[in-house]
Amino acid sequence: MRSYTVLDLLDLDLKEHNALDLRCIGGRPGLARTISEQEINRPGLSLSGYFEEFANNRIQLFGMGEASYLTKLESEDQMETVNKMFTYPIPCVIFTHGNQPGKRFMECAEKSGCPVLQTHLPSGEFSMRLMRALNDMFAPRKSIHGVLVEVYGIGVLLSGDSGVGKSETALELIERGHRLISDDMVEIRCMNGNILMGAGRNPVLAHHMEIRGLGIINVSNLFGVGAIRDKKQIQLIVELEEWDSSKNYDRIGTGEMSREILGVKVPLLQVPVKPGRNIPIIIETAAMNERLKKMGYHSAQEFNQNVLKWLESENARNLYFNKKDTF
Image 1 (cartoon, rainbow, N blue to C red):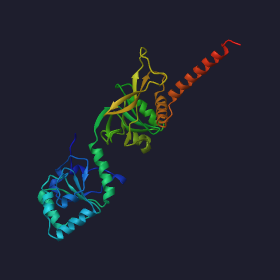
Image 2 (image 1 turned 60 degrees about the horizontal axis):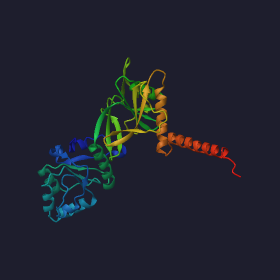
Image 3 (image 1 turned 90 degrees about the vertical axis):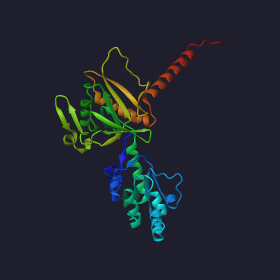
Image 4 (image 1 turned 45 degrees about the vertical axis):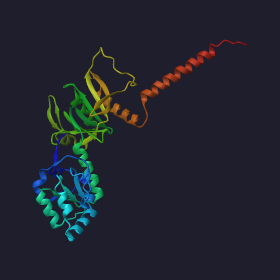
């Protein structure tokens, strides 16, 4: 598992409703401390002197209640619990609501080398944002060779051997109004144990494409910012392969296949490529069909059921008309 530091947390480039609004107000030498847990801790019990099961390896969050209690401890010259808390290897402490800790608290933090961070966000909102950020940082990940595009709202991962036409297919999809997330290498993260989020491994290069015979192109410059997206959930895998006349391909769609990535199964389609086949239209249709499946409508299964009903009704008619009169 990749390790992160407090400085990595400060350097996160999060915007709008994900921004943490963090700044360091003390203990800068400790910014290299490692964050090893994606959970956070409210140290109210520890400040009162109860250190049993103290989650010292988590980020310590000081809200309005903890900040008010600290003020009371300093005014009564009872800093023993604060001193004891800083004897533990705490990654960092964060004060919400823009609260400023007292002088003696800051002295304890500086002495122990523990970073003190501050945010103007309220505790509840900041906790949710921080949990999302930590969940993203510690999510299991792997990089896969392929192209990730968004087609009719469905994240489609194009896979296949090198030279089979993944980038060319993605380029035509982009020209038809769909969006590119990443070309060549896709970094996949498993969020919450069951959601696969795909993005470019390198944000600077993610929206560039390599087209054989043409070279490197910048999709956002050629087609506009509406043709790109930073990340997208992977909901369908389309594996492109050279047409093999000896292989039996699924022609009805009742035999569903899947591929497991980071413990999550994703629907898989194997699409044979040969001259004359319009692969982008096939992928568009596959994306729309996947949306129908998520809405509870399965075309292949309905077709199969209709055929069975027709056969049953046909047999019933044959039995009725061929039945001899016994009267």
